[in-house]
Length: 188
Image (cartoon, rainbow, N blue to C red):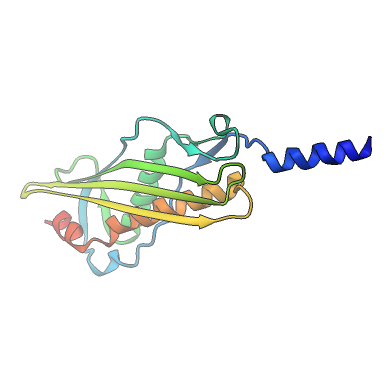
């Protein structure tokens, strides 16, 4: 009887365990050090949009992928907007909805992919953001992308996935903040 149980347990473990769905909070951490070089009191309107069609980032992997979804919770655009607003304001910029100059940051893509059929061996996160600056002098548009692949021994838990996703999203949004051409255009 004990031998059957051990064989059953081994077979079950070799097949892989089902992974449960996860909900992650999107809250990228940004660095304002590059903004200090270029900011001298400037006012603009900040708009952040989530242009994705769904809040599903991907599947966590394993043998039952359809039940192991990874989704965002809350309003993603609001959390990105709060991070950007704080970073800009800490650098001397002023965000005001009544001005004509505006920066629109759109989250175009955010995905999570797992590798491995029965056991997750790696995850890959990718993000894409589009920035549009509109001033009285004209418009500026540019897209920014980031991708990160991490090998894992076990499927990441919710906390680890949340950190990985926010690190990649933070990196792509940071590229907007580091784009001196965009910032100079925004100041005009």
